[in-house]
Length: 375
Image (cartoon, rainbow, N blue to C red):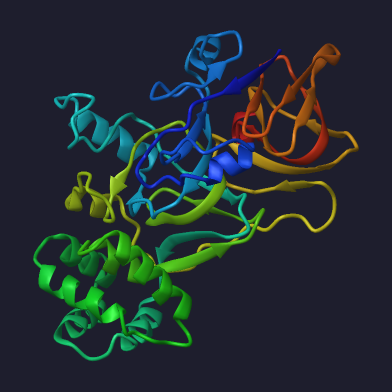
């Protein structure tokens, strides 16, 4: 069975007023449009063309959540728990109301995620940069007691990155944070020019926020169209700007670490944060053939990108699967030659009986399905 899905964009403040409208070839709404959810998560289940919602079809059992994400401003710096951490956190917070703003755990699931760029440029922060590289970046800020204080913490024995983040977010470093942000205005570095430019833009949108300095400790990543990054549990990250397709485990567990007015629980954040420095690999589109796979080692989801040039492309799937039209109108043919035409920005849901989908049209589609260990 094939069902066409849609949903209303969520109007988070960081959303873009234009990116989703441009993708869907419609007039902007006049408000920020941040995310469109295609899933059965109770926070915002997708709408089915017959007037029902997807959770009524699936019973709320879909292991993944597919989204369109449009960042006009930076999202909060955040990290997601493992399943064990989520279950433990959920159990500790059962006394809190579901809508309590101090609640860290909204469910008992982990939330690994993959983002693939739809725009020509998608900017993100991902993972913590090696300390030696960050010390060279700090040189560009010039000498000051605030920079020295941060350098001392980053050069200490033990978990230097964790200790530095705890200090920055604790509130005890407000004067140093302000001085470091002020120093960004005149900072210059050939090696770190993109990082400093991004930090200045982030600071302009988040004046005085300690997360601006946390961002200086993170890898700045620029994705081109069709490129993606996988963000595992424990990895600090934030999306900065651009339009993308995002897929994740069906969870809403977020621990925040700056660039937000929302609740930040520093001890809990640090308890699940992986402070091991290193780069985040960029997953690149295929150079031959219409289909790109983005390998991720999680059981919840898999994602493929299909470039259509008019010729039909047959894709074997493990249902429940989804086909998102992300550029041009796509026609999906399933079992018994049933067909559904999907406007750009909408989804076809393929229920358990579907095994092979034939995609046709011109543009780009994404195929989402459960991960390999669930097949």
